[in-house]
Length: 161
Image (tube, rainbow, N blue to C red; front, side, top):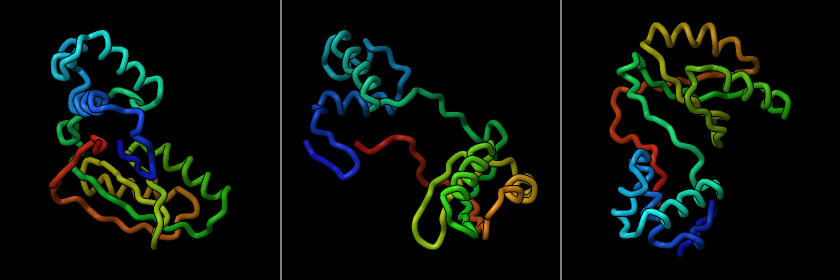
């Protein structure tokens, strides 16, 4: 099996990899349906999936909601630069950002910016209000640069394995 810098696949066999791909594509399949796809009986498939959960390979199961159908028409990527860089200030920033429901993803990044936020809102008017009232109340932001998504070419939640 191959190894990467981030994790090791050495304890996963071909069946494990197939199972993980199947579950990433559709976690609502029954154990019996999954077993048929990998040519095993349901019991070993069930045991493997439980092992994945126990070992943290599978973190959780979730439903993917269509953003547009719930009124979130605008996706924005916002690059943030902090004014100061101390542990306390960084921790406070993270705590404040995590509390904002419009921020659906937050990454600490390298390069010209400190953080990359993925923000989902109804429209430009709501984004303006969010920037002024929510993001504007977060202390120590030096600059915020917004990039607006005009079309999604590829979007996946699956980890390539």
